[in-house]
Length: 172
Image (cartoon, rainbow, N blue to C red):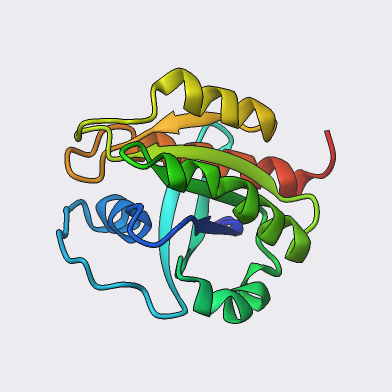
């Protein structure tokens, strides 16, 4: 059996944007409505089938609260791609993406980025074109998701895995 590449990715964003629920929806296939905040960091692994073969994604779920910033920086090392997640019902969470980008790239230079607008099943404040413009600003792809319905969740993690595989292969 061929070795399956292990690709470390991180999922970041403000507290309560739905990072953990997105990851659990993808890895477990279920929606968990729990509002318990991640303490520090958590991680999951999942096999992802890409056009070039299967990869094993090591998905690191970073706590979004400011008090965990000192803990997060060490966990970015070795990651190849980052999902910058915001809540489409919160303009403030979108505005925070610049800070998240700076934090991630400060610890893991050259990281590939993906911008994710989550909670599209709710009444949005941030229109899709605003999210796409933010992604263009970061030179990143853009996906919209709903952890509740599952919409876009597979696309999110397949895109993140592809970005990580590209980063692993070297510069473009």
